[in-house]
Image (cartoon, rainbow, N blue to C red; front, side, top):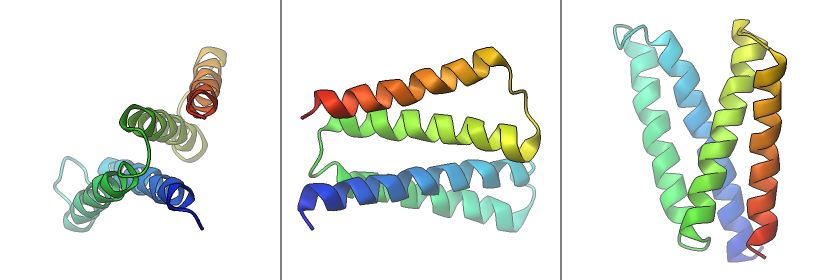
Length: 110
C-alpha cells in the first residue's frame, strides 16, 4: 500500500474518531458525566493525532477540508438518523453540497 493510500485511511479513521467524539459530547451532558467526557477527550485527541500523520503525505488544505466536510456531513446525518433531528430538504441539500465539495476537492488535487 502506498503512503498516500495509507494517509487516506488514516484520515478516514480521523473523521470517524472526530464524529465519535462529537456523539459522545452529546452524552457528556456538559462534561458532568465521566465516561462520555473521557471518551470526548480521547476521540478528539485521536482524531487530531491521526490527521497530523495523514497531513505528512497529503496537502494540508485538502486534508483539513475533507476532514471538516466529511465530519460535518457524517455528524449531521447521524443527528438525523439517531437523534431525530430535522431532515428538511434544505438540510439534506446542504449535506449533498458538502459531499460534492469533498469529491471536487479530491478530483482537483490529482
